[in-house]
Amino acid sequence: MKKLISLFALGLALLTGAAHANDAETLVRNTSNDVLELMKKEKNDKKLREQIEQRTLPYFDFTRMTGLAVGLPWRSATDAQKSQLTDEFKTLLIRTYSSTLTSYKVQGIEVKPVKAEANSTDVTVLTDVSVSGQQPVAINYKLRKVDQNWRVYDVVVGGVSLVTNYRGSFGDTIKQSGVDGLIKSLKDKNTTNTGK
Image (cartoon, rainbow, N blue to C red; front, side, top):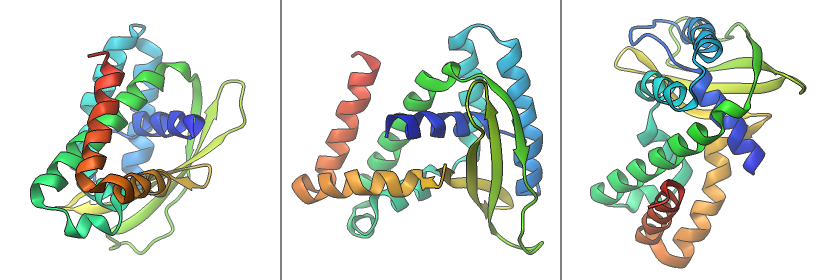
């Protein structure tokens, strides 16, 4: 699980781009190269994390990701609970990738052509990421078009979906202590991770 989350972190970091990208494949291809350059130039880990966070966050649909990770209980959650869950899950993902980002030495990224209709609003962009000293890692992005912009709603690392991976643990927590219990659990993890 820890390795999967670390690789997901790498995937988050590599996907950033211009807000008006028309094509999901082009978004991933062009901006992955931009982030690779940033990773080569910026030697200060904290500044690197901050810059990548600023560039990455606008391109993820955290509400959809959270809803998919929570699963069926999402439908019966109140608007306030949905908002809290989304905020806490977003914080968890950001802190996770921020803490593991600098441990990877990315050599290159191969973005494969998207096989979808030109007017598709939901696509998967397949990539192979070359990491120093390791076999290439398949990191694939599921994106959907929201208000004419592409947004990531899941990342699949080595065949394992981030959303599906969290759904199991979220489901267990919800069964034991409800949606409010999951919110508390995420808050506790986020507080622990910041050392507060």
